[in-house]
Image (cartoon, rainbow, N blue to C red):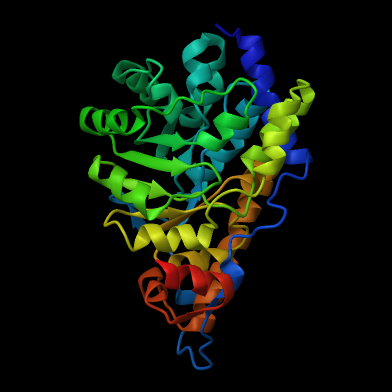
Length: 356
């Protein structure tokens, strides 16, 4: 069994690599640049009256923004989670934590997760574990421990087969994951969210997990942080040349976020979270128009949370201002109207849409 020091070191490596190294997609994008909102020259709106509040899983939030699952399990992640949670509480936004396996393995790492509920007593918080753990003995009781650790309102199971494959110490056994998801969905008393980790969800997977009883899907598509790239850097540190080469070859593997969003939205009847390379309010507006209920971001929040809560709050304010600006110039006074706005697809995104 790994020691708390080994776990903390791995978590700290991940934070450092994401914040300091070039790990964004190299040759691929989200494809949002090929989705065009149609300009309205007579919006007939007062900008100050635009309403960006939404409901997600029965809860009202001030904006369609999710502080997505990121970190936990180290001293650095404790401070990051505190700044993120303080923002979630103040701005009335939902927030997820990183994989809580570290908190189950080492008691001294629990506080790096528990800090989020201490800092955000009324916020909607999402617990999190990797799907590979479900077939390694992770039990309903373990899930309940994760939920209690942060007094979570929902439970995310992240699908990251590519990351696990490239990770030097990764778990590449996914046999039986779907039946385990179904079991957890029926046994837990909080909604289950299925999320990818930067490689996107296909319509086939979306249909399967909806039938398994999950309540929301987070596409987390290609175009932002490449976790194959992150694990490549970690493999280089450990001098694992084969895993490093694998990470280099699969650096840009996956379904672009905009394409994944369209595939999933057209295939299921549960809320869809758009994430993966979304970096500003205009891209949030585009994702909402393509059918997302809410949009998640991780890397932009992480880099600001390393600085201060003030930087995180400023980013939320900037993002929501740009989102409202996009709504103003398409003539949408609320998110529902935005989701029914006209748009045009071009290039590879139009080709992807036509192939579905």
